[in-house]
Length: 446
Image (tube, rainbow, N blue to C red; front, side):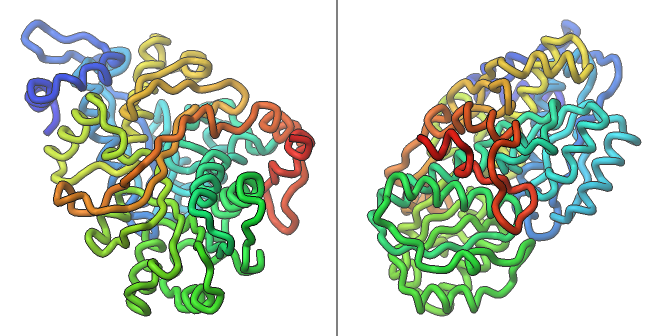
């Protein structure tokens, strides 16, 4: 459903969505037909195939839906918005080529970020060079906004970064009371960054807990690790109280599937704290284990409010499926850009940026978020909980006894952010662009 007719049908059924779309004003004739000055492209290089195709599917659909909704309210600065989407198959080289094409050939006025932090690490400098607003709603390594050679004044993050997520995961793991923890993470910027934050938080909140596998075994190949035999065997041999992981998409689905084939009670014997989204839950459906300790970025079923509920109804009516966390965050990203560009009365990146940094925005997540100056990170929250049966409401488990952690409570302290940006913190040995915040002077004395 797109265009004015579809939009008015939706609004009749779900009027609460008005609060989400109010920022996207424009001009229309009295008959409801929208008159545009022309068309402007917003770009997206995303994984429509490859390891992260689960995420790319949802993100691309949400971006198109947001563009339709923005256009139904007059577009941005009276221009029609086109979602210009290219497949990068979760490959860094493809993402680089796509970003160059979108900026230099398609003249996009803004970009939504790629799935992986490795891709954003390679593409953010291109956006910086060309002064293109780059809004991250999926890639989230904190180094993307704090590493001196990666700082980009046009890079905005509306997703909890790896410091925030690792902190949330550490708190979640501590609540289980686990004493012996096994770590398995993807070997690249995101996995290393978030694991470091998890370990640092765990030391604070559960000082008696022990990581039982050597750091040399924490990381697995990425992207796409099709066989998990060695990891499964190592977990069984170690007999941990808890497995911590931030593997995701196809890797998480493969790991869970293969572990259950080895032992149907694997996750009862070895409970797991892991990053997840509606995509993984939906991909496995009833086969997704119950009792898993999940941390999620924006699960719609745990963030019920009028705007979210209207969006879920709208998204489901268009696509016949429920929106993932990524769909929620990328919709918020598009609406934030629309509000800021309309407020600026321009697509000039510096003028739009001035209407983003330091400003607050409504979100589907039920609260306003603010883009703080310095790292241009939104104070968005994280949801933690345990998987349980939805009682037939959805074709997948949901979180029970969930808690929505406030962004301000898990946001990186400003002094740590500033020391990272000033190059005052040590780097993790043997890695590139993975500065360890726990080596910052302020962290050591905290």
